[in-house]
Length: 198
Image (cartoon, rainbow, N blue to C red; front, side):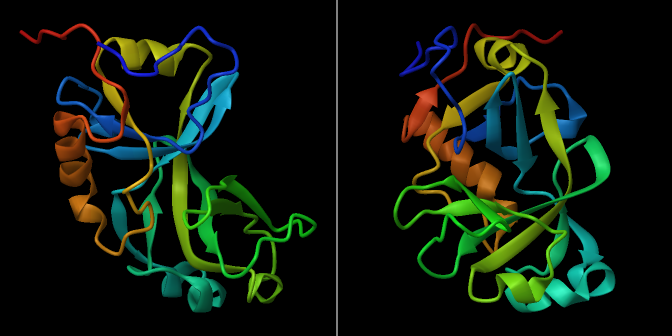
């Protein structure tokens, strides 16, 4: 059974949606992960939301501390390009589309979230963003790969409503999202055919 799932519709996008790793997903890179999709079209790109590291922002990017969310550590964003940094934040005030350092990904009022250009000087973003979180690496899928994994039952797709991607308690995200998926709350696409493991 699928809800609002149109994998063959070229206008269908998972941008801003939450992927919850099912118990069927065997890839250790994504065991019990929750991923926010940032790009979806010719392939997909997202960041793992619930893997904080022991590396503090004070140790690696102290100039960003004034804009950072708790916990103030680097998060492991995924297995691709782990030396690349991705920044997510909320707008601090009314979003100005003319500025070039911050791009909104989720535009729904009260839930806005976007990508921060980390090559900017933090002073350029003072008053522009808040609750910055920095991810090392990202999750990436080639064209059709993510859709195939969803249809095979590897991921459950949830609407981001009701989930705080920048929660100060990321360890609870997978349990919270799994419970929501089990109850059908916010589900956009559910497990496909059951996957048997020997």
